[in-house]
Image (cartoon, rainbow, N blue to C red; front, side, top):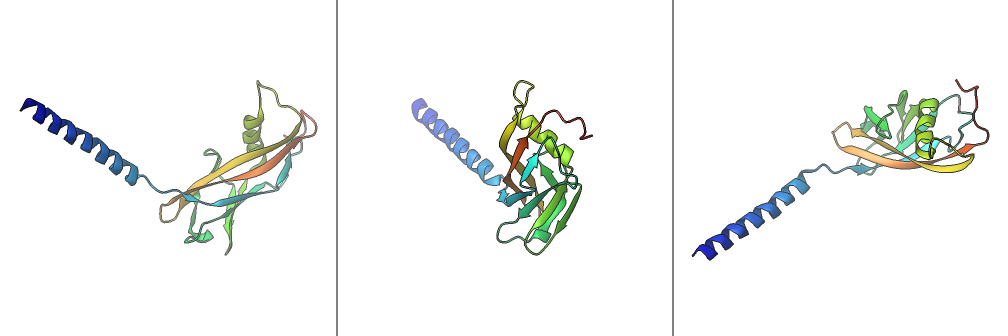
Length: 154
């Protein structure tokens, strides 16, 4: 009798673990994937662009650019845009070029040194739609270092 009771208790325990895992797995929010493009596509890190770096965000089907909550947008989960705008097709977020370059340099620095050359960097944009649905997307930007260091960019 004890063996049957132990087997029944073990079966119930395993069922709770499986069902509990299922409930936890299904309660997580679905993250929508957006397409992201950066302008300018190529950036010389020794001569940052004067006007900013723009992320062009194209939402997935079922969402419009106007559905994006601009207050939630972050580049690499740290940098908020300085300004935003939307059209019928895409959403644009403008970022401070010096702050974006700092993020890029953090990605390509090796043992406190950055080599001259050309780098293709992936930068992630995240945020939420106005209905609370989170989104994320990754775009690429080509960074070159033609001369280093440049004392004139401050």
